[in-house]
Image 1 (cartoon, one colour):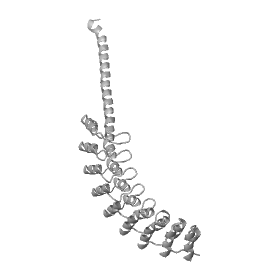
Image 2 (cartoon, rainbow, N blue to C red; image 1 turned 90 degrees about the vertical axis):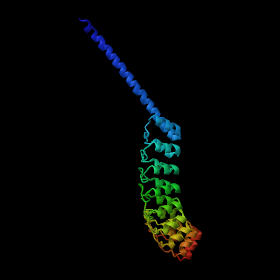
Image 3 (spheres, rainbow, N blue to C red; image 1 turned 135 degrees about the vertical axis):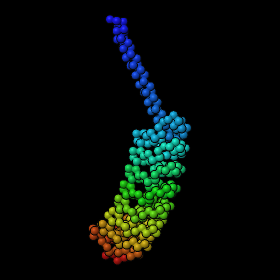
Image 4 (tube, rainbow, N blue to C red; image 1 turned 135 degrees about the horizontal axis):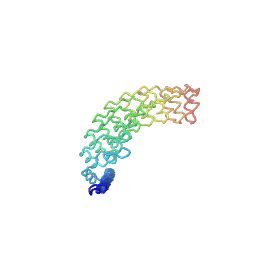
Length: 326
């Protein structure tokens, strides 16, 4: 065998070893880089969560992905917006973070900021073009979440940027429903001024007026009636604002509803009237008011009961007897 031929197997064995070593070194470099990237990503999201703008900026300078998301879909912008870290939000926006990237529940940075009352952040996101009408998986909008919490300044900012007041959630709830139910008068007025429809009904048939009447928010009821809310609109089982106000003894609301033409003897699906409901719930002053305004004490429910039949309070029994109840 010639010398060259004898050397070839040794040469190729050494070459294979060198290639194997090179491959291992290459994979080692890649793995080290991957672990470093993973650490940077964790540190990046953690810094955004805690409001550490200096670390966020440092990692951005090291080319961490600005829009990376955790397993729940939260970006650095989302966690900073949710937790009120204005400096971090402004830094991320200046570096062109995607403004409307949503988490797995459909929550955008704007929705999270509005929900938690971070007005300055809401303004910053809107200035960068955040869409105020994006809905999460439950159909909730930033406007709804600000309305339910009573954040009037955020509601105003969203409406100024064309947030639609009549968008409905999965349960057909609107921002007006939420504001009315919770007695946020200023927000109710702002929504109505932007054209919110007062008679939209949720999945249970409740209007903003029905919810406000049930909850006892006099000024809200007055405002809704002034914007032509229908006083006799029926919710599930034909409950009206008047019947529900009577249930809780809301005297001033009852007066307002009657003054706007609510039918005093309207019955629900069980044949119950406001008078019966007030008698059942032992609201003597309400019974007295309804009788004074002409409620019919002789009407019977579907179970053939009058208000007197279901009354337990002695004062109410006397009022009903005096009214000529059989």
